[in-house]
Length: 431
Ligand SMILES: Nc1nc2c(c(=O)[nH]1)N(C=O)[C@@H](CNc1ccc(C(=O)N[C@@H](CCC(=O)O)C(=O)O)cc1)CN2
Ligand SMILES: Nc1nc2c(ncn2[C@@H]2O[C@H](COP(=O)(O)OP(=O)(O)OP(=O)(O)O)[C@@H](O)[C@H]2O)c(=O)[nH]1
Ligand SMILES: [Mg+2]
Image 1 (cartoon, helix red, strand yellow):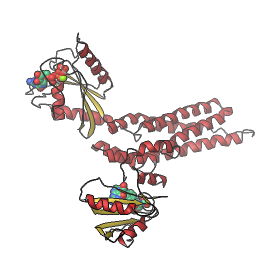
Image 2 (image 1 turned 60 degrees about the horizontal axis):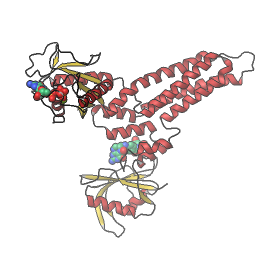
Image 3 (image 1 turned 90 degrees about the vertical axis):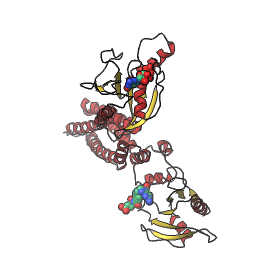
Image 4 (image 1 turned 135 degrees about the vertical axis):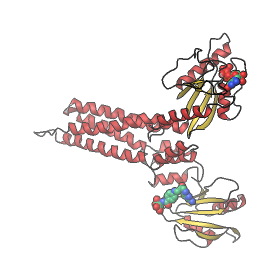
């Protein structure tokens, strides 16, 4: 196993820069730099020198013994003065040591995974934690990082292994005089796991929204003030506005944080019958995106006008151009010009999305959703086989094993190699 090292903090000038070293030669490398190996897990102030004895920096050094570190390997940390020259000099000195090489992106975490310090879902949680920009993303990533999914998988696995064992026992005793009917207990075990998996699958979509953002589409007739509202929310001139009806054609996307949730706000072409071919394409796109949005804000300048889009349950109906708030009443009203009502509308949007986000599960990725779906399909078949009777027990056991396999994939107990590359490619070097 190579000993790897990398700058773990961001590149460039900083207060302090952290260099990590991990592998069997980590302490040896520290000894080369400081002439000493400080007591494990204690910070020690040491002068670092290169091979020629030239002083590189005075740094805090921490050693972690094998089995008691982030990676699980012998490792060390150098907390340097955050100068580009010092970092370069220290990295160069490490590169000159026999048996040390620079780490690849995510390689420290990969070793933590290989040494079973983390399971695959936790690694994904860690990747999301580093990417997290909003409060909801931070909370969700921390939950996944703490290993909830792994704990659940363990419980499901135990139940299914027990169900499989019960079935297999009846296969062995198939010739006996009085075969014990285990099917009620087996069905009970399968049923409980299926209920859990179904609830996990339902929350997966919301978990993905927290990760990748909710789409909120502003739709309505031309000139309603959609683009003006988008600009007011974005705090910049993202979209062209004008008194000409039919100004916006393309869908304009602005990413922002609303009430702690990541949101992509969409401004769309005003909806109306038109002879203009280009405008018609814009309107088609507007309808298409609105259809798939998580929330639609239907904006109308005139509350008696036809909305040109059938309001559905969950849509937010908002009256626009209410500059002084005089139209406020049972209608939510805003003005993109004066800002009137925007705080109330934002609070309403964020409350609606927060309510939906509360059903988020710890299955945060497409990969998790697929594994859960596969497990559910196999359990469904297993249940049918059990119901079909004693001569189908081998098939039932087989389906149970397939379901357990899918769950093992979820936390990376099996079949990891092909997905690791993809997961770690999103990591920084030094993580
Ligand atoms: N300076 C520094 N800060 C950091 C990290 C780091 O590596 N270095 N981390 C890294 O990303 C995170 C902290 N995560 C860590 C997780 C485990 C261990 C560790 O040594 N685990 C041992 C001992 C546990 C214990 O003492 O309770 C173990 O699990 O056996 C260290 C850091 C965030 N902050
Ligand atoms: N007084 C007032 N005028 C507004 C307000 N919002 C928009 N307007 C004006 O209404 C006109 C149309 O605004 P836009 O934001 O371009 O309307 P739109 O809904 O994006 O229109 P299309 O892109 O054509 O569908 C512009 O002249 C804006 O200045 C508002 O809150 N108050
Ligand atoms: Mg517009």
